[in-house]
Length: 456
Image (tube, rainbow, N blue to C red):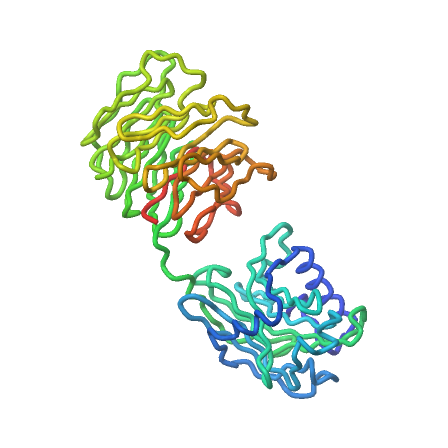
């Protein structure tokens, strides 16, 4: 039963459960931006089939009397709907505008009679109905905003992008509504459909449309975690240093600190294990444009070419202010960049220099570099989440100044911007491409040390 199994027969318990839902939703500071006039314009989309039916007159006020509820989904969105005996327009109804209404759907995914997700539509002002999906009883959980609509003569609908619920989730739901002229009342009854002891038939979420690409994260123990269409393969690589992915999302390379290369899926091994000096180690790698070769780069700024990779020079014999921490091929494919922990950038071949942070005071060391698709700029990322843009690289946001649980470990070009990954598996998407997930809710077995992306 939703919120502990309460019904109109126990109004005090009802009010307590509903107050908990309302407090939880508002505590998340939902920011849907779904002011009512805009939301009505978005009423089109999946039209829920009212598979749940509820008797008329089981609550005293017809404006809060649910007569049916349903769910529908298409390739991009899903929607929960509710029919009501006497629905009223939130844009003109004083009870809605006073905050005396709650429209909620509870989602039970494990048949235990308690909701794991809540879909809530809550009026917070005369013109704003905040609507979101969020995990129930999960402090700190991030809400997934949607849009609310009043369907004249019928009831209400809440619509969301498919990524707001897990793909392939089998679930059932209950619909709940409270309509009280006194928003502070502790004994306001509310209606539950189908009833306080039953749930809807089961549904299965289809998930979002297939993404155009994906990304991987590499742990210090050599484990790889894939997201979107990027496939991850089992295996542990001791002393893993870096990884690079294939554009098809079906393979990748991992290199260890000694330069041993391990190929997975559609990736091929073109050699490795260069002769390294005392205290020298491999710190990064990058594939060629054809993906029939790659470069390995050391912390001392040396570059080692394999397969169809050509040598364009390196920092051999040069005194560095900081070790080389990241390197990447130019978008043109006939050169590469190296970046030091101090932000110094070294460009070789057709890689062009557009500036660096070498002379800046940095709060934290630089950890990565990502070139723009046209080779006319690049982004640098600091361990604190700060992003520095050079050339035609546009600044699209950063985590600089935001509290991070763990430091940033890498940045990669993605869509029209970039992704960053933190040591705890958090992913921060500043691009036109969809966010495809992270390890925030399932900590990796070892800290994340690198990030790679497939096409997209």
